[in-house]
Image 1 (cartoon, rainbow, N blue to C red):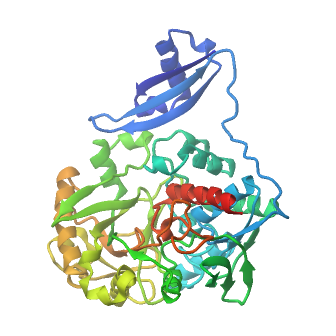
Image 2 (cartoon, rainbow, N blue to C red):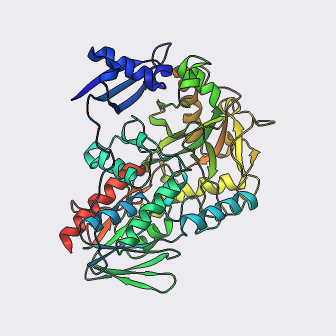
Image 3 (spheres, one colour):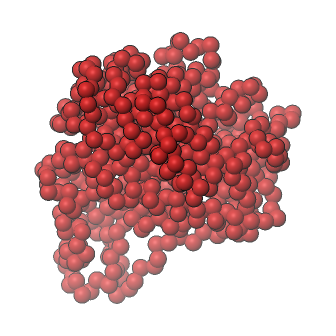
Length: 515
């Protein structure tokens, strides 16, 4: 017999299987001996009161065992099936490829960067030398930017597709059981590379193709129909369906579309800084205790405020994580965050970004639909010029930034490429600075202790979203070009791993209707 119950228990009891079984037995008014197995359906933390609690929804089995939670996907041999070309191997591209295989089509993935193993070497070399490999870095390569990230799998995009199905596909390829029931699931940068490799292995074993070091330099179009793509190495790949799943850092793709007069649209986006606190401080603010953390994960936060008519909000919050260099060029500084599955470092970092609207970019009007991209580039170049050379990033104590003061020294940081003290309030755009300064004060009222000299800001967090949208119709094809499918963050319709993956799957289903 099977029962479903909900219990609210202490973090200490939630970490004790015997205690959970005892609570469940009392709830059902049975003995613990009658319970043959327990499966967690949902787990969340409630830290609103002085003593944090754990909410659990449990499936209780009496006299029977549950079936394995691992889904069984029907990946078939597509060696000799019709081909679809996918540009980019990030979440949108990989999930599009996996869904195409289920639908009986052969994916051919073209990835400008290297495979995961080679990417790791290039990233390690970048940290040592402070120099960027323009085609193999935290943004480009197998799995895209998501491979080296916190691996957050939480999204509110319920209308976009089957969220649980995406989680099951991750689980099938090696993600831990926890992602199937935690309210804010994540995998961690230590697990993601192997999961990505497993997904790529599925594609290849089923007859699909993945070509690394294959940067697309042209899209072949005739009579408003796509017929393939050309790579910078001279290779041409023909197909009736081409998927652009390039991510929002592939600026050369936007420029290619602009040169070919393929319609794009400027859209609102956000830019700001990366903020880093001691994790112990965030734990104390959120859990109201110095001891609760013993049985709880590193605390996170989500903040939002209105300042001078624009939204200011936290983005990609990484508890127990690192700040990493996310540039794609040697003449720019971009930072982002990541953390491992344990989220065990002494630092809590988050992007704090300011809503930037098209009407805010009057100085860039001459660039038309590329105005936001050019604005991003200007800020990233300024960060480079105010850094310490290479990928040494400009930084400032949080309180000094708010008070428009130069920081004579900086607190310890997780950013391994190195920091240089800099007056960010002087060289960041004034409209960004004034909104950040006011918002940090608002955040301190919501989280007492947030505004502290122990925290620092690092510049710049400029790629939280795409400044360009590639317009598509209800079939996910470009509005003017048959067979040119656009999906993921780079198209301007998704944000984050899960929503991009769902967008990729839907794209595959639309391709099936075409070929």
